[in-house]
Length: 322
Ligand code: ACO
Image 1 (cartoon, rainbow, N blue to C red):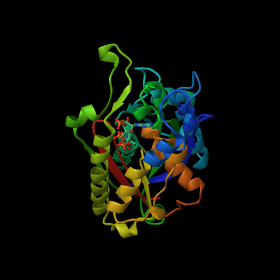
Image 2 (cartoon, rainbow, N blue to C red):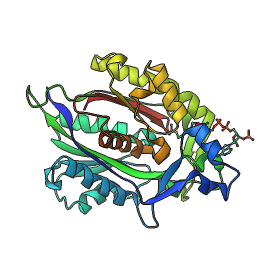
Image 3 (tube, rainbow, N blue to C red):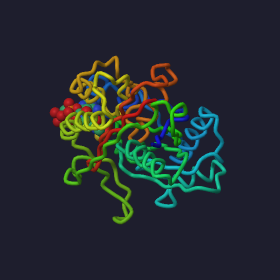
């Protein structure tokens, strides 16, 4: 059978680093409050005019270079984002153009913080079904543009950035060994819309800001994340004890810790970047994967579980052997 195997990975972060102390000037908050409740210490914010497709293109180039590939080697580009440059065309076709790719196909996928997991699962399906050989999967966001900077309960939590992976089909012994995407699990439940949403959009002719009931999101997150990770592992025929790395969506250190604990795994098995990036929504997992590889943590052959939840609610997980 055909497997989708990771060929290259890379990321991009905007130059501007915003420490927690930045918010102390305009809001009744503190570095201490933000750190202790979320684990976040700093985040990156895009420069004026620096868009999602710009960041996505930087991350894409890094992933292609890591895999020793040229844009011409790709069949498809998927950008997971809730903050595209324009209503249309897709950020993915902008990346395609920026890379000089004039063949193949490109599209955006919107599943908020679960976007990268959704995109990876869909790219896997394209490869396994023979519709594409090599797919560039990007998570890229400029959440700084949809934050209400007067709402201390949300604006301190998010950051901007992009991460990208190239996955490709591999078949037969000797080529794929047992690497690749082993199992996926996707879920959504639209009844929970009001606990995490943007109060504006195209068909309402408004821009809108991110609104969140933090405690409610927290309550759903731990339970649903542990459950989806368990489902994917079961489908892959693996036990939690065989997991080398959990690479969770980086929303909040307390959610990350509680989920690992519910899976029966210690924090030594978890890649954590939330302290440096904040919550970058669909970009957080590919960013964490890329940093985890660059740090020498994630190595070829490791069993990696990615899991995420976000607005919708939408949640899911992907288990792969790196
Ligand atoms: N600084 C100081 N005080 C604050 C801040 C802040 N930045 N934000 C909120 N507070 C205050 C609140 O106003 C409230 O004050 P009050 O009691 O006077 O009304 C108090 O702190 C407690 O507020 P809660 O919202 O109950 O605080 P809680 O301990 O639940 O922490 C938090 C808030 C960190 C958002 C938490 O609910 C959480 O982590 N939720 C998960 C949500 C999340 O991570 N979402 C990310 C998007 S979804 C996703 O990616 C999974």
